[in-house]
Length: 462
Image 1 (cartoon, rainbow, N blue to C red):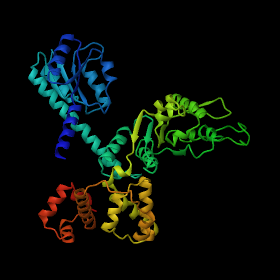
Image 2: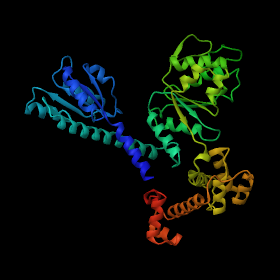
Image 3: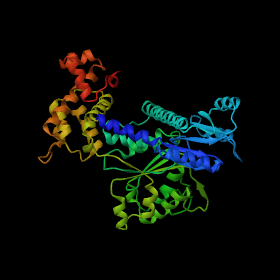
Image 4: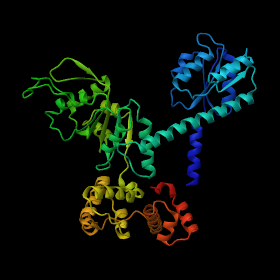
């Protein structure tokens, strides 16, 4: 675990090695480029400030070295434009005509540092490293702040600590506000609509409509009017204007579940809407502009359907700009107790029933089950458990002889030990003394086991 954390940290630091250099003197640019590339920095040189500005945004993980005296846009003007994009993006200014007052003025305006030509390579290199460290820290703090806001804000939550779920949440947070369509790929019951709602409810579109549509549940003869709308008289029975799902979701998000069920003829029109961001109601010639995010979901291999001629390749590649893969529950068994407890608590509040803790036998049943219905199956089991009790709920679930745990005996022992400690910490609201008494463990033993299983006391405080 420690080595993995170190590897991740090293990879993270390697992301922050980009330096943009702009100077009207090509020899200066070349000298800086060669010096930094020898130190394994990713360097790009410019002689046009407008081109440089077009390549940076608030998430750009780099810094800028700029000459002050340049034609068209000098270093001070460039710094102003850069800080309009991101006020915390470090920019190092160079000049051959520097003096104290100019240096002070540049620092007051937000320059990270001010270096006179001819410069000392070691000094410039040290300044670049410090500036990149600062950039990494700024972006990391922004990411953590957004993550905290996401978990504390109202709306759906994606629970779990399995690496695959953590990775998926990070992906979602990266594309949360990006104007990009998203494809969600996951088995039945993994929570595709929950992921779509999570994207919408935590994004800048949250105050607009979220429209969910199951493409496999709408008769083929009316799906076109459902999606695009229709004018009065557009077809038999259309006695009034109908607003389609795309138009109703304008400004917000439309979720197209089971996109693989879309009829082939409709796929052509759907592709046009995605590319043009316009929709025309049936029976009308007026196009309606759309500001919309489209999230499609599938439980099958769409590319295989394309090869079979059932799904259009061009529509597949248009939808497949960002793909979010939801792992099946059997691949994240460490999250099963947490999810079951969450669903049980929700059911207990809904049905006004007391929540009785699971026995170790029933916990073992949870872990060994293969969960073909994924999270939906687990939620249903939790509700039956609260309503009917453990015996009836687990007997109804059943277990075949083919179901065998994928965990070895030592892995089972560690998993159950970790679950017991986690349960005790939860029962005692993170109190070490209370947990020690419940488990009859010495303080040092408890701390050692918590460290072993990455259990942090603060997570259990209420």
